Every structure is written in structure tokens, then in C-alpha cells.
Length: 95
Image 1: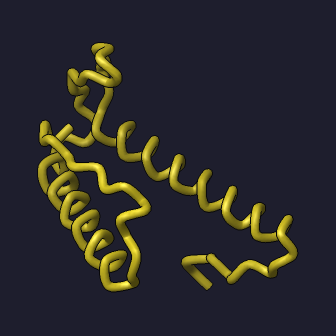
Image 2 (image 1 turned 180 degrees about the vertical axis):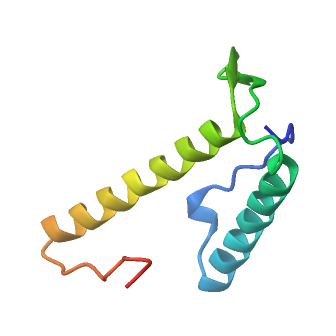
């Protein structure tokens, strides 16, 4: 939606907490740019190419898709940790 070429960082290249924090700061910057750009047009459809297929979706649909996908992976990690015999940390954002 921002029409930027994004460099995907291989997971194996992140080896320290400092590198992980930097990666997350960069993601935060991208999200801030997305929110800033579409704050007044969140429901207006965009023409995008997704896997080389033309799509018409709104920024709010794109944002919601990414967030729900992230929570899907969070659930996978918590489930896997339980299967491995660990008690996962509390991941609730609001208490």
C-alpha cells in the first residue's frame, strides 16, 4: 500500500536482542507511515498487486488482515510451547 520495496530480513540474521529491537523499531516506523498516509482514507479502496494479482482493497482491510494474521501466529507459538511442556508467558495486552 505504501508502494515501497521492502527488504525482508532472514530470521537467521537476527542473533541478538539489540538486532531484534532495531527490527521492531523499523516495523513501527513503517506502521506509523501507513497510518499517517491512510488516516483520512482508511475505507477508500486501493488498487494493489498481491502476488501479481490485481486486487481492490481498503487500507483498513489490509491492516486488519495483517493484524489478525499476526495473532494467528501468536496462538501457534503459545500452543507449540504448551505441547513442548512449557507454561507460556501471559500475552494479554490489557489487564
